[in-house]
Amino acid sequence: MQTSKVRIDKWLWAARFFKTRSIATNAISGGKVHVNQQRIKPSREVHIGDELLVRTGYIERTVIVRTLSIQRRPAKEAVLLYEETAESIERREQETNLHRQAAALRPRGVGRPTKKQRRQIHSFTEKNENE
Image (cartoon, rainbow, N blue to C red; front, top):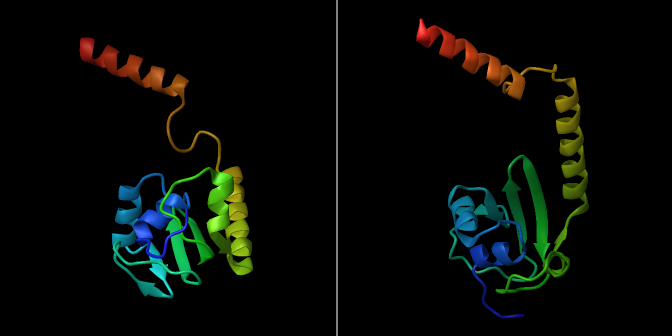
C-alpha cells in the first residue's frame, strides 16, 4: 500500500527493521535512527530517496527509501521498500565475521554457567544452608 505521508516509526515497522512500533519509537528517540545524517523524532515523515542510518544491536545499516508503506507485509515484500547501500552491506558482513571470530576465540566455560555447573552450585549452596 503506497501513501504520500508516512511516519518514520510506522515505516520502520512496516519495513521490518523493528518488531513493534513502540520499539521503533524508542529506537528513534534513543538516537539509533538518523535521516540524512540528522537525529529525528518518531513523528517525522519519511520521503522517497531519504537515506536512513538504522542501528539494531551491533548491526548498523544505511538504507535508501524506495517505497512508502504503512502496512506490514511479508518479509519478501518488505525488502522492496528500501535499498541497502553497498558500503553498508560490506561493513555489516565484516562486523558479522568479527563477532563470529570473537565467539570462536572465547574459551569454553567462560560466561554463563552450564546446566551441570548450575546444578553443582545449587547443591553446594543447599548443603551449606542445611548445616
